[in-house]
Length: 79
Image (tube, rainbow, N blue to C red; front, side):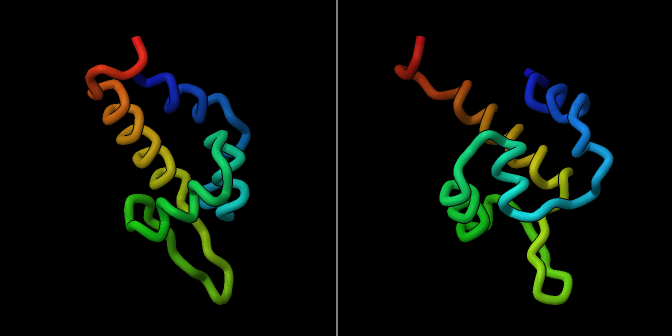
């Protein structure tokens, strides 16, 4: 169940504390539109420093973990 977190642990981006939305989307393997939808709904937390929006790597991990748990709990989909 920790496959997403394990992937992050081996990533060079793990050394960074926060990333841009574009980089967060790349790290997660999703499109920017999907990422911005998560930001807009409040499911994924972000913050601004000056004019720059950033997403903490920890917030991205938590969001992905929650999405993974939710998708594994769905019935009638997939297998």
